[in-house]
Picture 1 (cartoon, rainbow, N blue to C red):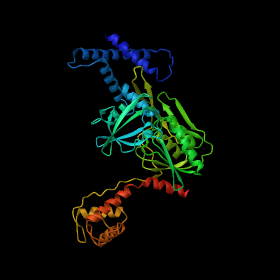
Picture 2: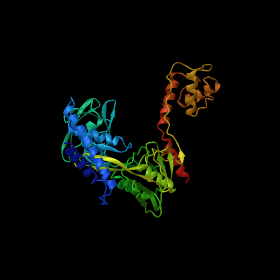
Picture 3: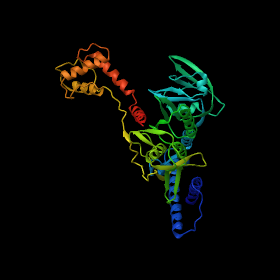
Picture 4: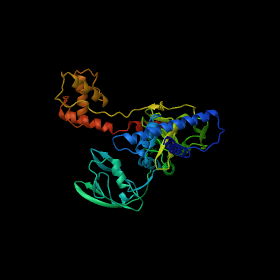
Length: 457
């Protein structure tokens, strides 16, 4: 039995390797023979343990369950980017990176236990049917989605091209049913517009549709005489390396974009062939800018093709190979690291922006506990002073003492809000303060800074 199980497991490993790298033939050495024997011995031990478990474990367990658990364990002992996928997990993973699937074109979010439509894709069955943002999904094919997570609901809605799905929505308290015919949906990860004479292009991810949609965006900019562009890579988790390099060929001057270094010492170079870059760039990054997005941003920074604005990026400087297995499962394995044109590595380090700007969210950190006026003291006064200073009303030192300067700042706030300028901080003034802070939160300070910089070039 040991030998039988070892042969099965060896076949599985050999089959998986055939999907990763070309087969090379080497002269067998004594070292290789020893290593192979160790492999067989270890596999025999694992097989024996699996057999013992299935024979003696008091619960129900199958070889497939044990194999999946074993593979999950193997990959969990590696780095955080190497992982084994079950059949369903691998299907979802490949669907997400391809940017193409068969469905209805609804973009969904989960909020407070509800599955809500946030938008619909242009030309999709959902758009043609008249489904709108804000619709709440109640059932799919007459099955309630109450208590289900968003992934399960999505898997119920997507399906083979040409098949139908019935979705029931709560629309303002009324139930509405739509029967939609699924079609091939190509996710466009690129959006663009012109803001005050400056081009703005956001790339949400690098899937198979990125390069074609970037080309469309740049054609639009060219037709409108735009040569200054904000490239927004914030919250872009990465994706396909080849797509990032292709996008770099629109912006990065001729030369290396990155070098991929493998374990065996082989280097693979990726290049830009752009002779004359025509766009002035400001690239927005933050802590969620990762992987392929960092490759593009880093190449732009290293070659002086543009400046980076925002916060330090995530710091993922490794490359993974995705390997499908014959049973429909698969795995992702870290096989290389990369360096940018300057020769630097950014793994665990990230990219530092040329101009550091934080989009800070401000909220009143206190409740209204009563009227404050000249002579009031305490922590509530100190927090009030802090929020007044955030809004550029000069309340003076944040010392917790409500003096004439704080009273004058309250008057300025009241005047701006259309209230009687009494200098007394009452409930109406508190509400006005909250409203102004919310308006400040809605401002994109990083984008504003990038536009400001480009206007000066």
